[in-house]
Length: 405
Image (cartoon, rainbow, N blue to C red; front, side, top):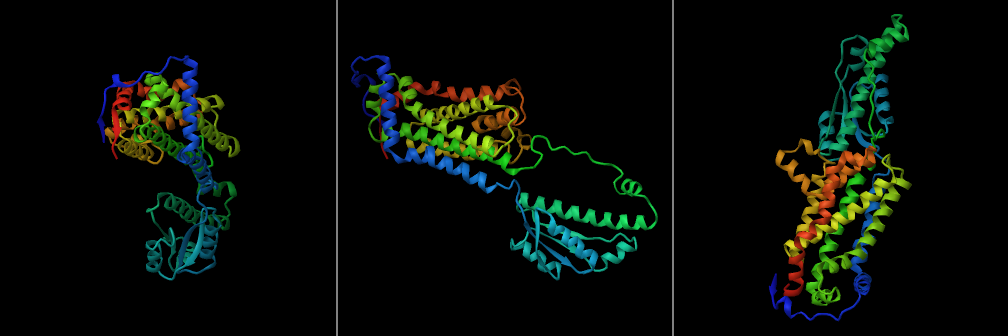
């Protein structure tokens, strides 16, 4: 809570000095605070760099590999064993167990020991050779959507390959040519194109949302923390005196050193993922530099705005934390915004990460011009300008409020 102790008129007026000296004094003051308090170093440099390295290393393979699956092979013939070997040879699946019954395999799924299993009933090979259309089953867990989807794809492919292999052998025995066999087994050839991310690399589309989102969280919190501690440690009036009582000059002087540090870390992130890891970026370097600048300034602007609405260190940091966490769901990466309710679709525009992610997808990932994403560009600029709406309230808080824990 904050309480009023004195009016703004009672604050002493600093001695006149040049505008350049004011900026230098503010910059030096804030730089000393950043160097003196280790919280700034950890939250502005150490933790963001660790986040970049952690997520890019965790998904370095692009997709989860060797997902554990099992087999219930009650047929136990050379044909069924060949199917199992083919399933084990797939990149995304690894056969880690053989179970005698479906009940035991299902229990293994429920215990999270495997993600799925292939069930080959007795007599499958005999029915294949006799053209009696046998049935094999595969079970998979969708508790993890990514793991379940990958296992489903591999087991479905195995089922199709098995039926195709038997059909091919039968038709060759009847004298059909390879072209006739190919036409019969695949009457329609599918020409599939994966746009922008042909490798289906999870690192490309998840890291480019999660890492900037976490960096936004740090920017929100550090911006609010740097303002709130002026009240907490009783230095707010001294800060305003240094700025000649001009709240705009005071805010710019306070945030400028932080902006430079955050920009340096953001440029490191972009260089690492686009330059070292070679993430696709047909939009070019210029768009990425602009996006980094908007990323930092919009995050800081939102943090200042939240503090202006509620000039309390505890409350403003809580709101910023909540907003940053909700941003991961409202960005549209994990679940498409178009599939949400109308109210949530409208609410998604209130999150800076949503606009950042859309600009990245449209301009960096797909190479379109900024005109194709002008609304998201304007939204980030608006977030950066939000402090204009609360300048008077912040000035009043710094001059008249005293921190109460």
